[in-house]
Amino acid sequence: MSEYLRRGVSATKDEVHQALGRLDKGLFPRAFCKVLPDYLGGDPEWCSLTHADGAGSKSALAYAYWRETGDLQVWRNVAIDAVVMNLDDLICVGCTGPFLLSSAIGRHARLIPGEVLSAIIGGTVDFIDQMRHYGIEVIHGGGETADLGDLVRTIVIDATMTARMRRSDVITQERIQAGDVVVGLASFGQTVYESEYNGGMGSNGLTSARHDVFSHALAAAYPETFDPLMPQDLVYKGRMGLLDPVEGTTLNAGRLVLSPTRTYAPLLVPILRERAFDIHGLVHCSGGGQSKVLNFLGPVRVVKNNLFPVPPLFKLIAQFSGSSDEELYRVFNMGHRMEVFLAEAEAAPFMARAESLGIEARCIGYVEDAKEPEVVLTTESGNVVLYKKK
Image (tube, rainbow, N blue to C red; front, side, top):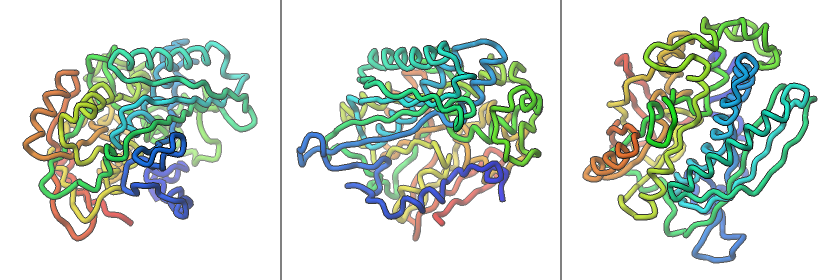
């Protein structure tokens, strides 16, 4: 059993998918998000989308960093995570909005005061305003804040997003085909719409990342930030302090891991509205990392043989975790968190659009025929890793 599973979390969520096996998969079973009939509008040419996600255990690290430094900015960053994990997933089916957002916060009231709630809500509003500048309309519909000290050790920050779109515009991933190339959009660096360097973490793999990177001193200082049932040899077993500098970046280790999940909306929403490119598939490499696309493939093989150099954050995780390449690339995005599948002739102009916003882009691979869905990737160390459906 991997250390990831010993910590009580699963990158692929196999048990969750089994539990959901009897649920209807919607109008387009291979779409990135569940697509429903237009129950709200009643128009047979339209469909409804609803999606729920959140910041995950990233909020536990934000709590420790805030307690250590008093820096409320980290809560604004985590608020962004909860929005982006919904927004960018919905964009992967071709949706361009408007998007209706509802937030849900569960807190331990004795540990999480009102100033933290204000920072989270303010961060959400500021991010919505920023997206409006890029023509992306997110409407905040309110939500719920619950005091759940008996259940929540620090704070849980979740959100739900709803939208409508024309059925004819839905991207279902079924058009991913042999001959396509895969353009990866970097998760790290600094775009024109980000205020500082982004480590690229996103909101997946945080349980593994924070316990592998940070030292056991955090366990003594903030025992409320981890599961007391977790095997003690896996609790904060790294060597970094929250404020330690990280080579190759301008951020300390805490801020690096707490970088807000990057949104690709300012790039993708205008492109989808303009029909500027014939996009065959969009995959948000969130839970499942570089194997995520397996969930949506037909009988093809995605070959990833030109991945981004591993950025400093993920080098740090690899160094301290000792995990195999197979697990690292299945748990973490390792440098790019959005994949775009399209014809080879369209790759260069698409990448130019991305670069104009400061998003590093590269052709990371291609698609070829296969007997069954597969992902084959070559890691920075030269190892070849094969992922198949179970």
